[in-house]
Image (tube, rainbow, N blue to C red; front, side, top):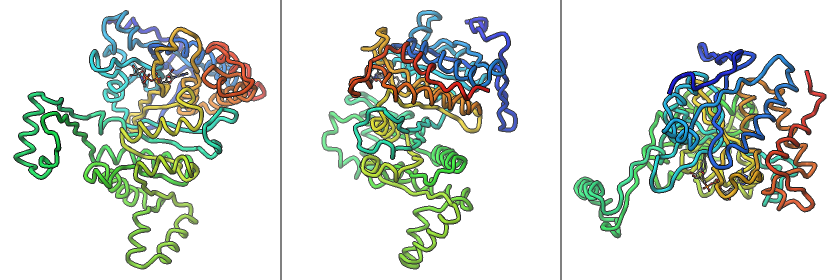
Length: 438
Ligand code: NAI
């Protein structure tokens, strides 16, 4: 593929990062991937909404310099491969990009393009804010208490998992190794002949950079608590280590700004409950961030019964996958949840709808574009274009509160009209407050 395949706007410029500082030109070149399935129709609604908000906020002063980069089925058709190297290089060069969902065939074909993009660009943090928009139907009684940001590790755990298929030669070799080197573990396998195995790596470096980014985010955004979610009571050397490394980092690198549950427990063991309470209250009163941990299953329970006790969550890949979708259910489901994949060192950021390609809805102009539009709002905030991001969010709030929603929400809202994807996008633009115009 030739570089002329890309068609950046003539007045567009690349975002620059120098010594960690991002400089955003008036027309930043933003690579975008429409995606598969419902992706193109969502993008057709999201792009005008983002453009309208930027225009409303800054007039001719700023514009998003969209540049399509091929990926998914469209790329397979156009250039013969689902994830061309040029697409990856373009995202790395232009730093900030946005994408719709991409299909992953189950059990065969090419591997997940989403995972490949995250791994190739080393986008180690999947960040998903989960917040209720007033008026959106929710299965819980107090969705207004839900305001969490999930930091899910994106490069390790099952994303780097090693599997041994039942009955295969590698499986037999692995079992032979286990029998020789870990006889006690081997003896616990009930049905070795039909057992498959998965191994997941979790490292100190991978855990530290994820927890570091969650702590920095919490401090910069005046959040009160970071909770490490793990299943360390069972998987001590992977998930348990994640929590221990997270605490080490919080106490070592962030000791002046954070107090931890582990410090509390240590003081309690040494000096008693009252001393531990006094120490913690003094730390919190001085404005320190609380870092604690919770076992994964308890986190699910807590998220439903005491959602306001969870704030920023730092967790590994699989826990984060389950947890972020479950939390999303409280605020209106997958169609409402934005996401971003970030590397805080290279400053490469790929914003994306959190849901998949919804094949059954594809081509019907019925799907909810909020996840992609809100991911765009997150992107605008990342660029420092807060006024435009605020207009996008206000547009969605306005459309929803006037009962103008897509079918997924309309069926749960008595009296609401089900708009098409395109009409909902137009309603979002109509509800952007014009008095914010610069
Ligand atoms: P899915 O998210 O596509 O669908 C799950 C359910 O949510 C379906 O009932 C669907 O109709 C509904 N849904 C999803 N997005 C919606 C929207 N915007 N508006 C209204 N309803 C919506 O997940 P599924 O079925 O597991 O995966 C389908 C394909 O998408 C697979 O190939 C999968 O690998 C891929 N996928 C891609 C992701 C990505 O690109 N980041 C993430 C998740 C799945």
